[in-house]
Length: 279
Image 1: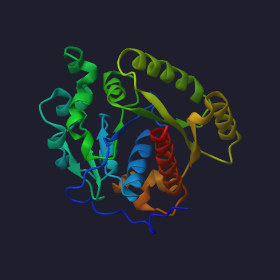
Image 2: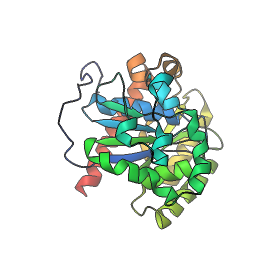
Image 3: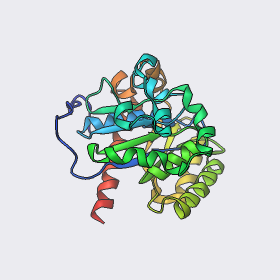
């Protein structure tokens, strides 16, 4: 079992670029409250803990990923809103976090107006992909935290991505919402981004005391098979507390069950990516 204290987060090495372009992963679900942002920031932190260089792009107007990594409002002079509009570059908007090797392009509430702005723009679905192009060789992973909707911002995330990571809450309506998302992914793949694939679906907020959680997990695995990660993220108080301290759960309490689950998930993600590269 990998533990943070055994493999500490390593300093970001100077002038050392990854051997291959970043794997761009869009963390998306059109339903809110499924652990999407929590998954994005904790997977990013776990990847950094094993030596990966990671950029997290906060594409949600609520800016929760930025807040959850300790990026204060005063540090968000440039944001994903300006990046989408093309008035600043990704490099200009990028902010260092307190975690060496993890950087963020933060979001502000201004991003809520981007949906309207994008409607009139040329190549409106490709704005983020084109903005990220100059930095893909600087990171091992770029994670995009999308808003809980299937509008133009999420569309930009999907078009920019190599793959999707879909957090799915263990609740009654989970499969119904997922079927809508899968149809959207198919449309994006057929018309805008042929390389887009589902990297994996992660079951979140699992409560082993609740029979429904187990039933939902069984149903999802029955429908989607090995697309569903083996790792399940439990419902955990420490995970819920961490954002109010501006820290990922892995730094707030790396010994809690939720943090250990995200470490296992990151390991599973890397294993799956290595299999894809070898194929």
